[in-house]
Image (spheres, rainbow, N blue to C red):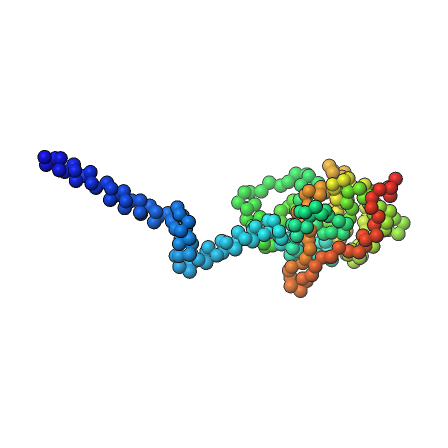
Length: 264
């Protein structure tokens, strides 16, 4: 009888123990319920709230930078005097998302893999993540595969240089290039190309310091860049404050005829 009584007492004990364990487990992991997660996020004092706010801001910046507007640090003088080393341009990633395509005169950022760069350099995973986050907010240089140049010819265009007066020609029309670096010729290298459909012929504004489509004529793609490799259009200089301005399409390309018949 004594034994049965002891066993009966033991049988009653698991229920309250289970209840206490379930309660403590829920308290240790507040994310198990939306209400608990919210209490954890908004509680914990100023330090936790500051950390949550900072993390939220970083996520929002990365989302905007990845899909809408990205600061791009200018790493070289290939686009002087339009863009200086250290300028931050704001790249509009929606510019060509809804049916529009790059036009002559646009300043574009593009991935040069398989056009300007045949073998993309390898990168440590951690270093790559740090660089991507830093470049997303304009604090670090972009990837070695990213380039910024001006569109000179689009699909079907006949682009040549130079005519008897040393001018760049597009579809038989000479281009007045007021944006060129002072003292630069349109090109010291002669070329005569017809841009394939879906491709772009791009050049830097500082022709004497730019490695652009001219330098890749003998490589796969013939120096042209696929339109689908364009990351976005550089629409503004956002930094430094003294150079803040919009980057408008120059008027020198306004009278260029549509391709067809100009090159025979």
